[in-house]
Image (cartoon, rainbow, N blue to C red; front, side, top):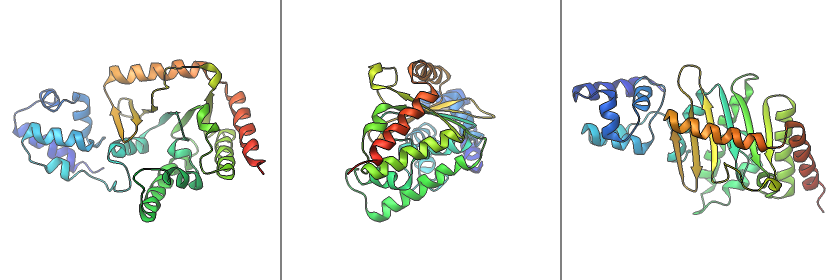
Length: 264
C-alpha cells in the first residue's frame, strides 16, 4: 500500500498529542500494529480503522478510505491478504478445506456454491479471480516458503465431487513433489490436537515481526501481539510434531486421489 494512509494517521496522532502507545491503548490495539500501519507495512481491518477514528475523533475518515480494492475479499480477510503477499514464509493449517492459495479453480467454485446466503455468478467470478491472483505467489520458485498442515477431513470431504477432488489432491501432490510446498496430514487416528478449533495461518516477513491469522464462520482476526503469535506458533509446532511425515502424507493424499478418480 502507499504510505499516504500511514502518514496521515501519524499526523492525526501527533496533532492529538498522542504517542503510539497512548493511541494503541485508546483504540484497543497494540503499539506495534500502530507502528506498522504508520510505516505503510500493514493495513488495518475495518474494525481497527473504526476504533482509530473514534480514538482520534476523525469521524469515519480512516474507516472509509482504507487503501486497496478488496471488494472481492471478505472484510475480515482484507488485512491478512495484504500480509500474505508480503510474507517470506507461510505456514497454513486447514481444518475442513484446502487452503485458498493451493486451491484449483473447480474446487474454489465448489466451495463458493455452498455459502449462505448464496452469491451471484458475478460475485463468485470475482472471488475466483481474486483467489487465483493470490495463488500467483507460488509462481516464485523460492519465496514465500509454504508449509501446509491438513487435517485428514480436508482429504475425505468430497467437495465438488470425485473428479474435482481427485484433481485438487493431485495438484497439492504436484506442488509438494516439485518442492514448492511442504505438506503434512493430521490423521483422524491421532484424535484431538491443538489446532482443531479453527484454521490458522502463520506468516513471517523480511523486515517486520511475524503475524498470524485465524478464521471461523464469517469472522477472522489478524494477530500481531508477539505473545499471542508465539502461542499460536507453539500450537502449530505441537500439532506438526504429531502429523504424518512428508513421505507418508503424500502417499495418503495420492491414494485418496486415486480412490476419488476410480469412481463409477
